[in-house]
Structures are given as structure tokens and as C-alpha cells.
Length: 82
Image 1 (cartoon, one colour):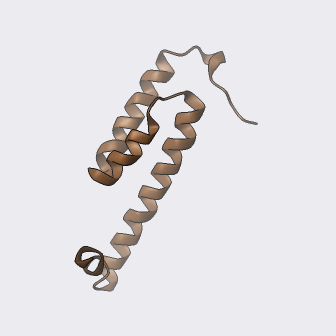
Image 2 (image 1 turned 45 degrees about the vertical axis):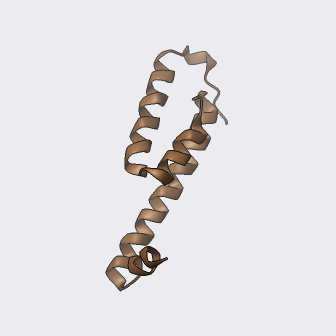
């Protein structure tokens, strides 16, 4: 609990903490939505490791897995929502 209190000790710390929270939320939503669309397996592991390690580690790993999945998939197999 001291960590959370320290993250909001002043306006600058609160701003940085909120920015990190928003980026982590947006990245998590992107990983879930894009992972389902493209067919990346074990997206839930990326989300768990984001909380345990850091989003700055798991998000690039997810993007790498997404890229590998896209290069191994035929273009007509990827579903696009209109």
C-alpha cells in the first residue's frame, strides 16, 4: 500500500502513475482484441506477465508473436470486422 501512496505523493508522480495506468489498460485491451482477431495463442499469459514483470516487456513480446502469426497466416484467413 505504501507503493500506491508514494505513486500519488505529488502532482508529478500522480501524472506519471496515471499515464502508466492508461497505457497499460490500452495495451491490454489491444492485446486481447488483436490476439483474438489474429489468433495469437495464450494472450492471457501476456496479461499476467504484464502485471508480474512489466508492460514494457510483455507488450513487445506480444507484438512479436502477432507479427510471427501474421507472417505465417494467409491474408484471407485473417478476419476483419467491418
